[in-house]
Length: 151
Image (cartoon, rainbow, N blue to C red; front, side, top):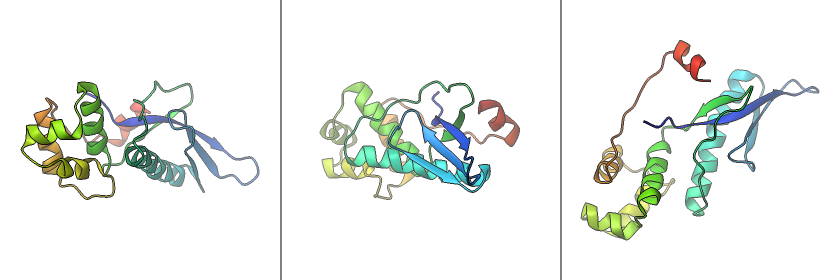
């Protein structure tokens, strides 16, 4: 099982007290918030945007690194996580869009839309594609106590 979250560094600013967030796996991505709660919310949005940008521009999307001392894990937003899972699985198996399209009995354009972060692909389609590639989609809801243990 793979957890879709990335380590981030949260630092409180000296001048204005805002919380600044950076990602070691996405060095060009950063955000901030008025307090820790807002910074965490903004961090998830920033992470989703960084992943979406990488998908659109066909850039390498790293697997999450091991969190360093003092880092917190930021979850990948639900709207992009299945597309990221499909991208990684196709890459791991060396399968391109046309290969997956043949496997699913659809056109290559359908697979392209599945990977497009701007296209609202139905969850069932993404789940079917992942299952065709030997992956099972599992969703876990963690309590606040368990989330603290993971971060």
